[in-house]
Length: 186
Image: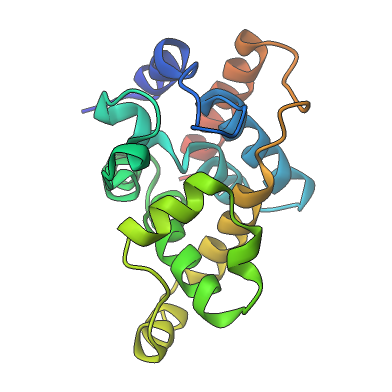
């Protein structure tokens, strides 16, 4: 089983991986997403979900952006499986649903697709494209759907090359403290 220390170590080793064409690393993106959740006054579990929503990308061992090669790495399923064991559904479910939230938003909001980054557009095609009316209804009925949509919107905004943590070590310290806080509240 992966531990909280393993997650910090994984970000320390693999966090330098960059999203194709976005000028931001996995570590920077996770940190920014977590900060946006904090600024929105989200519950600590949702802040942690925001921080770790792309953990599965780091777990695959694939370099760069798999979407460029036409690969859907199913990172949402991989990451949420680990997070469920460590932190429970309030962290894992929004992570599991953040890809579905993108598909939902593309189908429910006409201009949303225009706001997606190039990598998010590539992954959308690999992940099933916009939801059907039936899929939207099913998604909206899920317990953590609203949190997943919030996470998804932070995800879209957390790609600012000029917005950086004080350093990788400082960002990882913040992550470790947040994981400890969420784990202690279970």
